[in-house]
Image (cartoon, rainbow, N blue to C red):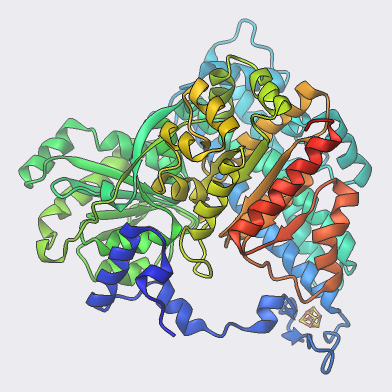
Length: 624
Ligand code: CUV
Ligand code: SF4
């Protein structure tokens, strides 16, 4: 059964573009999903193994056929190993991004990345002192140089600790140590995942999963946190600002440049280059009224948070942006970029420009991006887009009107500032019951869920019940599109939360950034837990990823739970083939780490699970 545009997405702009694609005979992810149905149930259950070439092996879920792989691996072992590899890939993606950010920072301190500078000196100094780097008698550059080396060392460390894990509450740290899951070094944990899942190494599901938790912690409190912090130093720590989102931010008369992917190292330069007088002049010559940069996915979130650069859409809107026929260039770096964009951009005048030495796609113009001449390359890229403007085929252009205002830029620092410098007012509001708790809602889109349906309904339900929501990633974009990131959205919140939002002039849903910025949520949660003198797992807080799809999301889910936050997944992870693993993730972990997962595709029921959890934690703290 073919889904209609209305069934594919709840977002009117996306629905229009889905119809346009259909009329033009253009294929999208939804069409390809239909062609995949029914999806392989061995894969869905996580019980196929290709870890050695005696296989592939698969376990019969009905207990009638094979119960073991050729080496003897059971469903429990295979499911756990597969999950560990997902965590490894996700942690690797975040952490390799972090490594590149630190390398850029290091090159900058060595005078080899002249386009970059230090934007947030306060943060530079506070990060340096966390590492025990003395500031006395040193220039910024010297301090930065020492910090760069210290951060870089986190990746290759053999014996921990990873410095930022020290930001966690005492009790959490002690728990990690006693479980033997305190991460040692970012790269080490990821490598060990690959080693352990090789044939004939780690073959106990619990033992395998504990290492998964350790690896995920090296992401959340390591790679991701390092990425966030150093990007703040380089590009500035986000502060509240207004912007607009959805496909309607694309312009009829300006050159539309889309930045898609994850690394602000690139997008920051593109945003600058789009203001270059020479290029603006060239745009005029080509008949355009200017240059319009819009983001997609997390690199979009990065520039949105720091500059208010508009966002054209989240993960499932990447193709739809091209379908508008109004995109001169789709510029990508790494992660969550569909290779389908190659064929798709070929159907329009859009130039598909890949920039990362690590990532190429079919049908791209390659313009490799290196720090040494970052700004020059960014200019060349934007120039290519501008020169493509006359090729826009007006007959194919249809930009949906929908664009929505949003208020963004809520770094942990900005939130504390909005609260007057300390978490005390928020804690008072929680203790008094005006705010019931905090919901962290994050993650991707997934064609298995109606686009944005899970995100928007879950978040609405939470704020209605006086849960303050913090968001990142594609959930943040979904919320923005649904008009939940404006102070006026407080009207949709319960009375308590509404009052707090109105008093502070903030939206009931706070955009904290990209996926690596979930580390900001950890920092905020830690700050609250510490000032209450409790562990993160004692807080009336819960997490959710209603439409997750990426391996990064698996690592995120694992570190959020390992940090003590109950987390509801909206799409089913490939673990149901093992009762043991499923039970461990959804129950057993509670006794181990003080939090666990739940799986609930219905966003209303998911919200209820979170609310119940929050109520339970409130009771335990003696709040009502
Ligand atoms: Ni990194 S990981 S689809 S862009 S949130 Fe968006 Fe966020 Fe998932 Fe990817
Ligand atoms: Fe089969 Fe074991 Fe090889 Fe996996 S590791 S493919 S279960 S023999």
